[in-house]
Image 1 (spheres, helix red, strand yellow):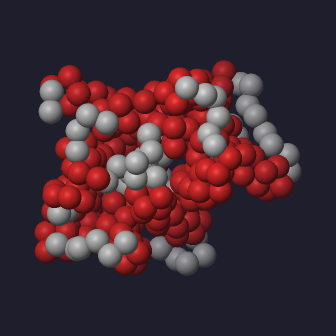
Image 2: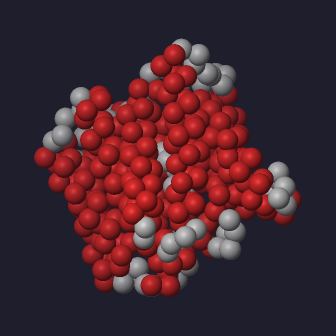
Length: 303
């Protein structure tokens, strides 16, 4: 892989890592579901011209509606909604680690639903990753009625939905341009979020304050639009095994920026758990059979 593409992937990881403290701050200006709905809707609008240019028309074929809608439900509506709900109750650094446990769920679900082989190295990666996740969550110190405990469960649900969405993406859109798929699924998912937010938040809200608007633009334009364009452009050049392994940097940057910007404490449990989760992600990705590694392109939420 060329060095410029490695630097670009690190830049994407940095942008997505910074998104977690940004979302935490944004949760003080907007209700979680309204925030999620607007950022993904605006991100999809930014991607639409690029998707239209690639396929030579602005919209997809009618037969693709339900597959794209289902992917949008799993990838953007459920995962994105869970992310924003969860981060409003949980520290942003912990949120980044919990959410990025999705490769473990993807690997296990691909084994169950697609019949993909599960290698010994992948099994080791799953064990290492889940051990790290337990250290980060530290469940024995939480009470089941505490908001943080509920938030962790919501985030785990979002991570599982992301893993399931990645399995569905691999099964149903294997030969499709991933930028087009990302754009349309994000658009449909954001519409679902808008509908849910209109009820849950007693009307779809928007923040016109300078900090709220700035965070909205960052998460929509840089995280949900630019980040995807860079990642998917590079993924078109290389096997997924060479690109997806850099995703382990996202929770690393998420924890680092959360500590620097929000003053979140870097506890021993968090640091050890983060190291194990990162090691698990790398092991799971590199341990996949060669054929599976070359064909796996998972849409990343950014968060």
